[in-house]
Image (tube, rainbow, N blue to C red; front, top):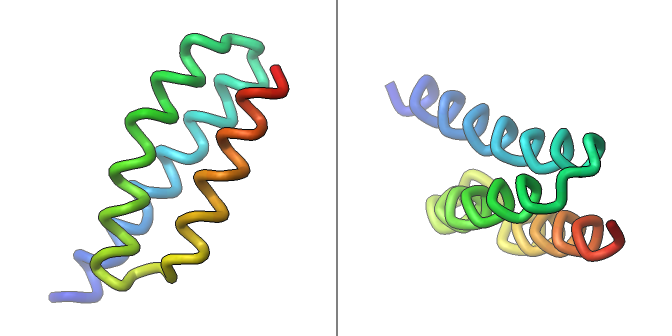
Length: 71
Protein backbone atom coordinates (compact mmCIF):
# COMPACT_ATOMS: atom_id res chain seq x y z
CA UNK A 1 0.00 0.00 0.00
CA UNK A 2 2.65 2.50 1.01
CA UNK A 3 4.94 1.37 -1.79
CA UNK A 4 2.38 2.08 -4.49
CA UNK A 5 1.65 5.51 -3.06
CA UNK A 6 5.35 6.30 -2.79
CA UNK A 7 5.97 5.16 -6.37
CA UNK A 8 3.16 7.41 -7.59
CA UNK A 9 4.40 10.37 -5.58
CA UNK A 10 7.96 9.90 -6.82
CA UNK A 11 6.71 9.67 -10.40
CA UNK A 12 4.73 12.89 -9.95
CA UNK A 13 7.86 14.65 -8.68
CA UNK A 14 9.90 13.44 -11.64
CA UNK A 15 7.19 14.60 -14.04
CA UNK A 16 7.19 18.07 -12.47
CA UNK A 17 10.96 18.27 -12.84
CA UNK A 18 10.76 17.15 -16.48
CA UNK A 19 8.17 19.84 -17.24
CA UNK A 20 10.67 22.48 -16.14
CA UNK A 21 13.44 20.99 -18.28
CA UNK A 22 11.14 20.72 -21.31
CA UNK A 23 10.19 24.39 -20.96
CA UNK A 24 13.87 25.32 -20.68
CA UNK A 25 14.70 23.27 -23.79
CA UNK A 26 11.87 24.99 -25.67
CA UNK A 27 13.28 28.38 -24.68
CA UNK A 28 10.08 29.51 -22.96
CA UNK A 29 11.27 31.28 -19.83
CA UNK A 30 7.78 32.17 -18.56
CA UNK A 31 6.62 28.56 -18.82
CA UNK A 32 9.82 27.37 -17.15
CA UNK A 33 9.33 29.76 -14.24
CA UNK A 34 5.70 28.74 -13.74
CA UNK A 35 6.62 25.03 -13.94
CA UNK A 36 9.41 25.68 -11.42
CA UNK A 37 6.95 27.31 -9.03
CA UNK A 38 4.73 24.24 -9.31
CA UNK A 39 7.64 21.81 -8.89
CA UNK A 40 9.20 23.35 -5.77
CA UNK A 41 6.37 22.50 -3.34
CA UNK A 42 6.18 18.98 -4.76
CA UNK A 43 9.92 18.47 -4.29
CA UNK A 44 9.76 19.88 -0.75
CA UNK A 45 6.81 17.63 0.09
CA UNK A 46 8.69 14.52 -1.07
CA UNK A 47 11.70 15.53 1.02
CA UNK A 48 9.46 16.14 4.02
CA UNK A 49 7.95 12.68 3.69
CA UNK A 50 11.41 11.13 3.47
CA UNK A 51 11.05 9.84 -0.09
CA UNK A 52 14.12 11.79 -1.12
CA UNK A 53 16.89 13.29 0.98
CA UNK A 54 16.73 16.97 1.88
CA UNK A 55 20.02 17.60 0.10
CA UNK A 56 18.71 15.96 -3.07
CA UNK A 57 15.66 18.21 -2.97
CA UNK A 58 17.88 21.27 -2.56
CA UNK A 59 20.12 20.10 -5.39
CA UNK A 60 17.16 19.65 -7.74
CA UNK A 61 15.75 23.09 -6.95
CA UNK A 62 19.14 24.77 -7.24
CA UNK A 63 19.92 23.21 -10.61
CA UNK A 64 16.49 24.00 -12.01
CA UNK A 65 16.74 27.59 -10.84
CA UNK A 66 20.26 28.06 -12.21
CA UNK A 67 19.18 26.68 -15.59
CA UNK A 68 16.24 29.07 -15.68
CA UNK A 69 18.47 32.02 -14.80
CA UNK A 70 20.92 31.05 -17.54
CA UNK A 71 18.23 31.37 -20.21
